[in-house]
Image (cartoon, rainbow, N blue to C red):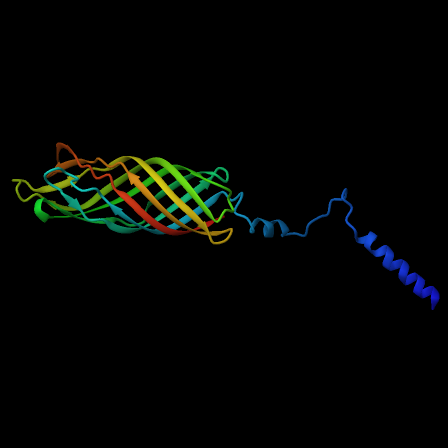
Length: 225
């Protein structure tokens, strides 16, 4: 009995040393362990997609003496981003459907409706670490916005169909992402589009540009992968 007791004590004393990890020894991780670790952090993920809705509001007095006000309109939006690293990204953003606007002239005269659908390519800088709960960002790039279904008339003109050619130019973005977890996040952003499309009257250019310069305010949900 004493010999068994002595052997048991010897094994208990040896066990911690036997199972201690040698610092110089490389331990092979089970298959899939890297995937579990990767899911606990947003760092290192290169792609993101965001779906949401935005309100686009043109400025007042867009065509001096003709279009005094254009109502803002909502539309669904989507964006795809490629992250070069945790801070620098390239974003393709656009309206998934058309923004609808009603135009009014002098003293609130109804001129009709017009639709537009912008798309933009921008570079962005995201501040802070990829796993911060709140991450503000800034962006700048180039956009185009196609106008369609123009049902605009100018009552005082002998020929009255007013049209707009495609707008293009600078777009600036400011926004913030709020992490839900390492994959999902919520986004709020505002975008400024420098929009000066040429005005046409019954399809003919009249040498005038509309000063729309709209802002968009958007909210969405995104995923990283």
